[in-house]
Length: 360
Image (cartoon, rainbow, N blue to C red):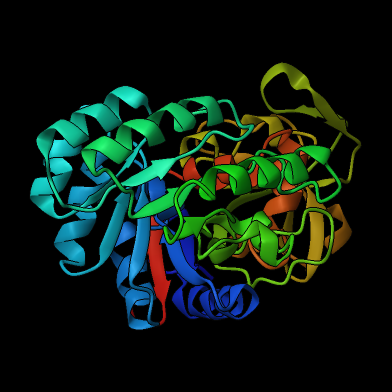
């Protein structure tokens, strides 16, 4: 049964989060671990997640924007916080708040140098993602400028585009490009590995790794067995059971039909809770020890499950159907919806009742 009257509850297991941090730390050693807390800690609550990770020994963090950095600074006033978009018009504000901006363009670097500050700033190198950062040619020009101005980044970072595909040739090419650039900045620490990059091997990590998804239970090894513990469990209450007296269509658009005698359970969660509409007729839930299919379209507040296999006595109003969790892994849901685990996590709605397991 679910807690209280909430139709759906999102459980966030902080003990599993801590175990995942320990697992990543062991895999990445001797590299330091800087947790990525973008997008409200991937939708799980940045304050609670940050406090638990800090209690486990994490002292460095990455966020996306200045606003996220300022929010985290209130929670962890002494932590080292990198702002990935910190040079986009907010470098001075980062300096004032004691945040470390990641500079991504030559213009941002020039602005930072003109300020004449000794405050630390990281530098991102675009080695093949073609998204953010200076390309190697720009870095070459920058280094000559830096010799005259005294600019020296506190951290040199790059981002792997295909880390979840271990055999992709771009992985090796990015490492080679990054090695050539980092040689121009002797003694400057480096950061390469995201969650999947950590598992590619030592040469893909650098001095500081940046796990995000792996901390929250996502699989950093693609199709291989997931070494991480499940952190999230989303359950929804069975609100109604219906035994079909005759063949019937189900849901908007009548996209599914079931024969007489089928048992349909309506549960209290839908796309307004962050569950992809694409799970209709494709996804599954786990109810009373058995996997059952989502039948018909997912609607805003509700979805329907075919629980015929459980029998008349195998399900009751009030039972909890797991929609995400140990028995319905994030990767399985993402595959069924035609998306990625990152989107599944970050789209979980604020209207879901949240329950944290373990101390923050």
